[in-house]
Each structure stands twice: as structure tokens, then as C-alpha cells.
Length: 408
Ligand code: C5P
Image 1 (cartoon, helix red, strand yellow):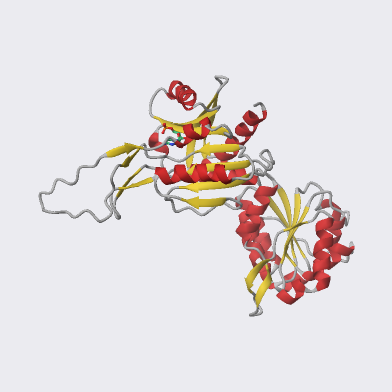
Image 2: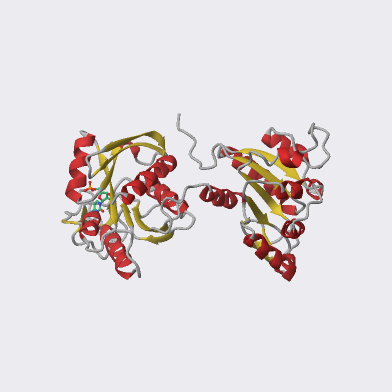
């Protein structure tokens, strides 16, 4: 059984829903937050109930939904205290211009606003309104005041609005709100660290249409880029040919061949105004490239054609060359070993001249969403990371890497 991977696991979130067309999106949000392992308690304003019924949220969350400050279900009549105590976060999505104005002023005319005033936990708002309402100086003043008060503003985004107009004021999509909250709840163990990551396979051309590549989905490298970004790192991700979305907050450079990946890595390090702190080489770099790739497509000349003879040249070892730089960042390597895992991992770490190496238990990891890892370091220590999703393993690796960097 793979463990749940999200930083939202076990978090208690009060989801406030205010009156706006985007209220229907709060249903998807409630469901996604729960999928990430959070408990969701919905509190609606009276206006919100005109857009969507409390029964929908009750069915989705399995919790009673509160609207009225004088709800007879709360024996002590203190719903505003009971609901906010023990919460890890109050998230209001959609947050109307009206609730922003009330919160900025400290007004508490209903249950949701009273709850916010009486809270001991952080408050996040996902604004949603017509573009003119968002641009109005009063709303802008309120947004600035709320941020000054430590309220987290998630959005708004721009785009087509329910009223038919286009502009700023659209509520962030539920998955973007969830991503922002995952970052929010991740410890900032790599705060401000400039981090360079290689991921995916490389593709070595034979001619314009054919090539040689390695098995690699890029999932581990992309999960690490995401985990590093959530942990506060400034991430540059150099990716071979993969079809994965760019993790939020990462700057992505796409390459094809090992030589291109090598050139991109050194160019990023050379051109950076400040030294990079961390380099994680996750890419499955092809060891050899074709020495003389054909500029034209090689023709199949006859039916009994045995195929062209290819000459190979050794590709640069990107990781070893970065580790040798005088301005080298803290270097982490990966290895897929099919036998004598620990012994080979220690030997490879030493050979590459790096402080940390992460070994996969064999090639059966390719393309899968889960994995099992062994981490070895320059003190001769070994740490086994039990089978889990690559997302969770990436978070665990970030913690190990941060600890190792701190002792250097
Ligand atoms: O030597 P080997 O390919 O087993 O080493 C694996 C590690 O070295 C991985 O971290 C991989 O990203 C990196 N590597 C590299 N350049 C190469 C070959 C491997 O950066 N040409």
C-alpha cells in the first residue's frame, strides 16, 4: 500500500464559501482537499446558498454544513469558536469583494466573518469577482490591508468571466489552490536555495527521424523539482524529452541530447549571477551518442539491407563535471543498479566525487509512479526509503538533502 503523499494529509481545513458563481468550483475544491487527506468543514454565507445548496457540500464532505450563527445544532451557540479551534487553516473560496471588505475592516455580521475574527489559525482567500469589482480602489485597498494583516491571497487569475467580460478577478482553479496550499504546508527546508535539476532521458540522434534513448519517464526528477520548489528552493529544471507538466514555480529548459543537456547545465551555472547551492542529477543520460549522425534521413536501400553501421562517441559525464567545478554546488546523483546495490552505490558516489547518491532498486522502477530507494553519503551512511509514491519519496529526499547540506 502506497502512503498518502500530500503535505495536506491530516490537515483540518474550514472551507468558507461566499456568494459568487464560482461557488460551484468549491465543490471540486472540497473533493480535492479531501483526496489529499485533509478534513474539510464547510461554512457558507447566506448569499452562497443562492448559488449552491449546503446539501451538496454535506454529501461531499460527510460533515454538517454551517450557515447560520444561531444554528441550534451547536449546543453552546458558539459555532464561531468551536469551528475555528483545531483548524489548521480557514480557506475562503470563492471570496467575494464583500467578504474581503468585511474582513479588512474586522466586521463580523455572520458566522463566517465571526469565525475569521475569532480564529487562531492562518486565513487564505481565493478572490472571485467581476474585473471592475476587483479593480475598484476599495477592493484593492482591502486586498492590500488583508495582506498586511498576514492573510494569504491566492489569486485572482485572469480570463473569461461568468458575466461574459474578460479580465482579472477569476477564481484560481481548484488544482492551483490545492497546489498553493501544498506549498504553504511544506517546511521551507531549502528556502532560497538555487537548485538545478536534470530529469528524463536523453535522445541521441542517428538521423533527423531516428535516435537512441534511455528508459526514463522523468517522473522522479519532476517530483523532485516540485518538492524542492515547495520547500522554498529556486528551481531550474533541465529536462530531456518527456511529456510531463512543468512543476509550479520551476523554470524549465528542454533539451534532447546528452551534449545539449551538458551544455545547458554549464551555461546555467556559468551565467548565474550567484552560485548555485544544489545540483540534483536525476536524468538517465545516454552514455554514448552517435558519432556522426546523418543530416539527411538514412534510406533503406534494399529489402535485405542489414542497416547502417553506427559509430559511437562517449557522452560527457554531466554530474562528474559539475562536481569538479571550482564553484560546484552540493551534488546529488542517482543510480539504477541491478545487483549489489549498496556496494555499487558507495563505489559510484566516490567515483563521481559527490556527497550523496540515491540508488534505485533495479530497472523495474522505469515509468512507475512508485519506487524504493537507498541513499548513501560520504560518511558511509545508508538510509533506506521504503516503497512509496515518487511524490512522497521526493519530499523525503528533500529533507535528507537539506540535512546533508546543513552539515557541510
Ligand atoms: O554513471 P551512471 O550513468 O551510472 O551515473 C548516474 C548518475 O550520473 C545520475 O545521477 C545521472 O544523472 C548522472 N549522469 C550524468 N551524465 C552522464 C551519465 C550519468 O550526469 N553522462
